[in-house]
Length: 188
Image 1 (cartoon, rainbow, N blue to C red):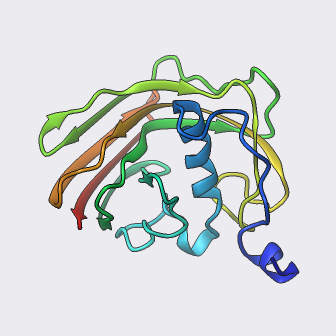
Image 2: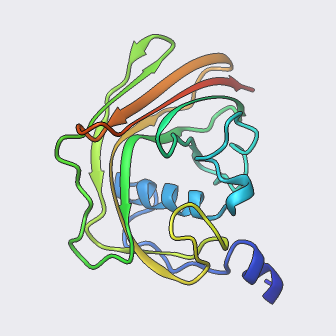
């Protein structure tokens, strides 16, 4: 990777994860790295339409983003055969030490696919993982390696059938802060 790419884009070679990549903890850490891979102009959490949803996606899972507060409505294509992973509500901490998990004890969350409620799983990473993001990214704001931990109420879905789907998810910290995302997903 060129030095300019490292300085202005995604940083080169993140350290391996301390979790299996397809475990709930590994997926949560990978989701954070996915958000951090974007600079401020294409941040998927700040995206108001869904136009940036496909950037920097992994080959084995499709990540979706909520918001930094409030409600957002997005439309995006999803490749057929790709499972989905996203937080109804989450928090991350950086720089983090081992055992520093930003658990929000009063947090609540919800998710629905085509009007059917989806189960949420509380997932936290007790061992920090390294995040090297784009300069100005929405996680650490820096391209320097930073130890991060994350906690949240997450949803993991198997691949959706081809066609259009309505997905809504969100949550609250129990103290007035809330997030909500509504997606129109088109699987093909």
